[in-house]
Length: 240
Image 1 (cartoon, one colour):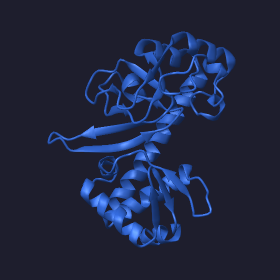
Image 2 (cartoon, one colour):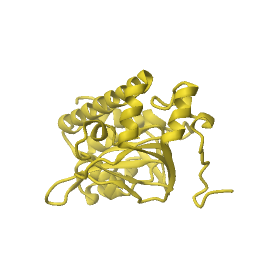
Image 3 (cartoon, rainbow, N blue to C red):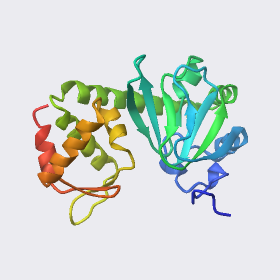
Image 4 (cartoon, rainbow, N blue to C red):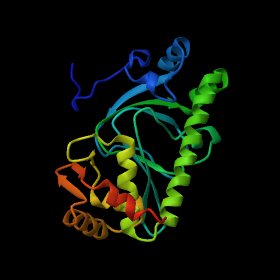
């Protein structure tokens, strides 16, 4: 039976067609069998709040399909998107392992399937399987390196245009679809959310996108953004 969101649901992790391609999920049959026994599978609509910054960790979420944004907020209410989580990522791992409050909030940005594992089960799973420890450590290390790249990008970029150029190029490298016009990006984020990723305002992002279109650097059709002149974006950040 199809899901309400037309997702290809996988209730059995061992039968998932992409698990061998994901850092955390690429484990042996017996380990995958145990994972199936401790997880709770759920389908979440766009905008579902998985956990909130500052609350005590209930466990981890494994993103099976869809995407989620990880955000942090200041006491004044300003929000910064620190990462867009992709399929195969484990959300809330560091807080769950340390037993400390979640350091970010997690919210789906499109219909998604996630597996939830309670904290006590996840910690026991780590303790009993070396490969689970290693794969979790790899994901946490990737998260650390990603954070360092973001800090470098925000710290060394001289202008907001450079920051947006870096973001578009990063998306090109991660998942740009080749077309005769140039790489095509599917951007489901609003201008407000893009602004939250580079630490600026929605109005500034809208203005820069308009400027990029006038200069024929990009072309926008609905949620598709075609990078017409990747070299111009690269030139913008060349001195950073």
